[in-house]
Length: 250
Ligand SMILES: Nc1ncnc2c1ncn2[C@@H]1O[C@H](COP(=O)(O)OP(=O)(O)OP(=O)(O)O)[C@@H](O)[C@H]1O
Image 1 (cartoon, rainbow, N blue to C red):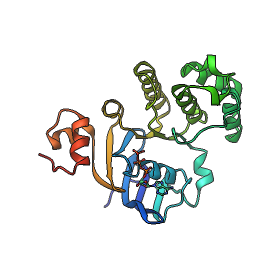
Image 2 (cartoon, rainbow, N blue to C red):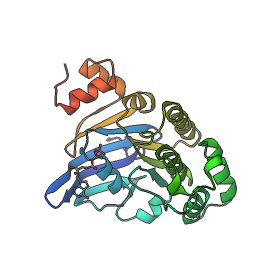
Image 3 (tube, protein in one colour):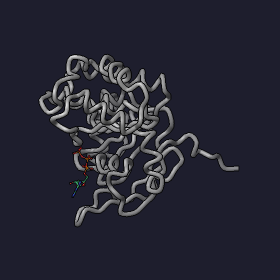
């Protein structure tokens, strides 16, 4: 009898391709991400992380291949699934002239959330945004915008959270507070997180599984501990460099 693993996997990607004119950004991608844990999506610049996340959200259409999220076909049931998902990305800006509160209110209405005022107040408190709520989003610093983007990504209490470099522009103290908040959110809700990051300390701290991409394909996977053992290294930074440079495990 074969085991049915689909219930444990929150994201299932198979045979995925994305071509932009002459560029093949995603070149036959297959991976799964487990429910209730944080999975790192790693790779050097241009490896295909952002393109993958955009396809998982239905913001970009694949050239071919399949994406299943929470057991459903993303391409067929995008609208139903998007209510159960959210994302944060430095590449997607929010309306500049609206205040932080107005921005979060617009997103809250999109998800038809009840008790939105209280929800925004709680998120602002958790993410240290209370002082910024009535300032225009466009006038905030890069790190402040990142925190607003994270608040937006949590507003509907998503079951699946896609985070593209969530702490890239944050100072070490704020980044640590954000990681703690995400860990607590995951413990409270059982959410699954896919995290694209260049910060290997963050990966070691937060991720149970790692998917390593190069040129739009998976080149290695495993838990951080398994990868450290396989490559004979003491840090994920060293493992990352080995894989990115196509060095075989020692
Ligand atoms: N709209 C586009 N048109 C043409 N090529 C694109 C487009 N978007 C991405 N690409 C190309 O696809 C490849 C993957 O890019 P992607 O942004 O997904 O990489 P990434 O892993 O997120 O990189 P980084 O770590 O630099 O953010 C790159 O070669 C990039 O130049």
